[in-house]
Image (cartoon, rainbow, N blue to C red; front, side):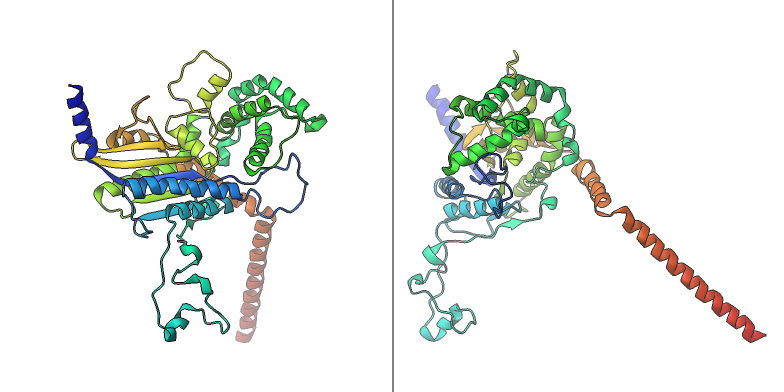
Length: 438
């Protein structure tokens, strides 16, 4: 009986046809944001938080992992880059753009060769500059080491709401909620230990979880990039900073379910559109990837009901509440979320979701396979009017802040003066005409 059941399951699974894949990853390790330890204030650092060599390596290895899964094992994508199969986007930040390039070097390590020209036509391989020469060791490779370059699409931050979590208006009062205050009070001993170990005095002392997370960010960047940590910072204290990092971000950026819905809507709305198009045959991209940020993945994990600010706070505060799903670990560098859409001739289309390479339950607390109709209904039930709730209000604020009152006054006075001058000219002409008639 067991053998028969296993055979039936194998037959069903063997008929799974992978239709499309959508991936979103966090950039690799970067430099620190905040100058709070072992740094020089006001010292120019170029683009702050730029991707480091460690981050480049992380993304390259992730790209190799994706190649193994979707090119070698599943033969889902062509072995060499095909512009009709994949589309890559990135937020408009150096660290995410560079991460995307590194990732794709791992995914598509071998680039094209040039046509073999006879000597009289070799000039076609050169720019029109008179002294330009072909490097002797280049051979027939288009680029050194036969690398493959792939276009990365990006938009300015204000237009890229699908992968850049941004809606400042709805986060205004997050630090004033009762939940935020409870977590802050419960962290009093951690603040004391931290201030003592770093010898922080007076106004330097830390007494807020968000401020503490800024210090943690510096230490994590140092740890990834081989830089020193404070000599008196105890491993246990650093571990506590790690334990509270995800909760801190959730409380700061997407504390309520409404905040999660608003900020995740642009991405999931597009995801459903892509999946619908793939099923009806109107989409030709098979692989769609986004190079993004920790807040991007953090928000999406909450939207998928895999975690929340409330469940993390309850666990941190040691409340007697049990959760089947509540991710508490921070979205670290190169973390990734993958949505796979399959079709099966027996059961129809279904979705599987992976986080950091492991399947996660979406439709229920345990099942890792979700019928597409069910997945679609779960996602669409959370979609809201992002334009109305976020963009329009922000645009209004932007217009007011960008156009000072004196500009309106000056413009109005100028128009009024022109009207007065025009009226005076017309009056003089009418008087002149009256005198001419008499």
